[in-house]
Length: 377
Ligand SMILES: [Zn+2]
Image (cartoon, rainbow, N blue to C red):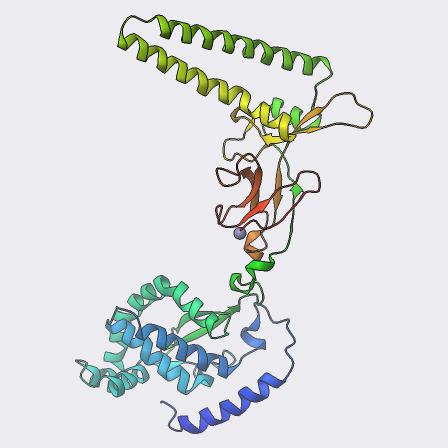
């Protein structure tokens, strides 16, 4: 039951396409476009595009040929896939697909009975349709990117209507499910003009020490602050004395093995010293630093320590904070995706905002005073 006057249908479609372009878009179609916004040109163009994409696949299986035949049918008579149609009129039958396969590849074994015998056609479809479903799933990103490149930001799905009751045939076709949000696609962003990001404070959760550090902060002029500073002063003195002893012992060691052992101890001392004090030096120098492991949550490392001076206070208060921002490059997927992290070697000694989705490409500066950042790539 293929439309025989495909050429005249196509001509009519072209006229309609021109009319469609000139009419202003109401811009509020979203997911429920199934009933409200059926456009046969869109379906025809989508079908042609999918067929072209499928022709480029290495997979030349029967299932892929079936897809190409179905695309050909849909492009020739897209109105058959109008979701408003009654079930008995919607879609293409198994024999329609067989007929199209015979027209394209007459040498396929058994294609004649696929085109002429509904029972055989049904069996063939039942055999190959699930395989096509798997291929479709695997190729979905390729298909969607190809459609977007054609200016069709739609999600399209294979669809089979089981027919049911007596005399009703199973029908095959495509369904346009939802329109991807226009204007949010990553390729729309001009990388030379990435907008600023705005950091927001985020909730902090954890043990009592962590909560206390985030709610009240540690006033370094109070008794808690004095205990904190004294403990670290003691640790600092101990580490310095210990390192000195190790160096003296290395100089006095009698054998190479003893010398290397002491060197190992010295190396470990440096690592421990670094993990204990480096963040404090960075905190004092920059007034914000990544918090030490002890204060980090299990899943994550974006807690920061920040020094703030309250109005009228003599000394700083140390707060545990966490910031997040939306990634403008990732658009709707980038909500809260930017976390503050180390600048690594490239931005040595500073903190940067890194997008969870592309931590080494979507990199932004981080200013804890203005809570803004600009694109650094
Ligand atoms: Zn991003």
